[in-house]
Picture 1 (cartoon, one colour):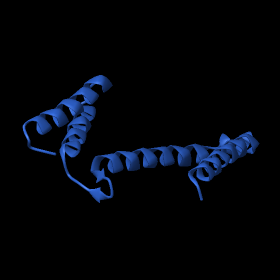
Picture 2 (cartoon, helix red, strand yellow; picture 1 turned 30 degrees about the vertical axis):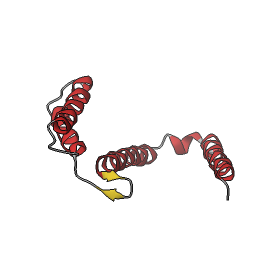
Picture 3 (cartoon, helix red, strand yellow; picture 1 turned 180 degrees about the vertical axis):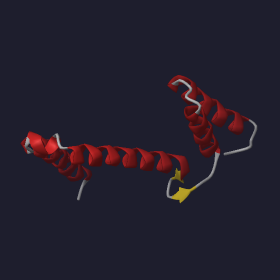
Picture 4 (tube, helix red, strand yellow; picture 1 turned 90 degrees about the vertical axis):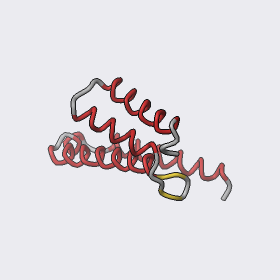
Length: 104
């Protein structure tokens, strides 16, 4: 298959998913069980994204400055720092570790 066929298949899959969302009855979407499951899926997907972006480098796993920056950001979140402070602390941590050659 060519790249354009994959793009069209992905577009059709997205359209079908959107269409199914419109066709579901509102009772199904407003149930407490649906809200509970959808909130859990959101947390799971976000966690998977963070882990993948923290440890993956190409097709291998690496421990580098990204891990330290995520840990610093997690501690800042735990201490209830504002979001911009969390982002800046993570970025500065990674930059300093790379500057001093302590991490790749």
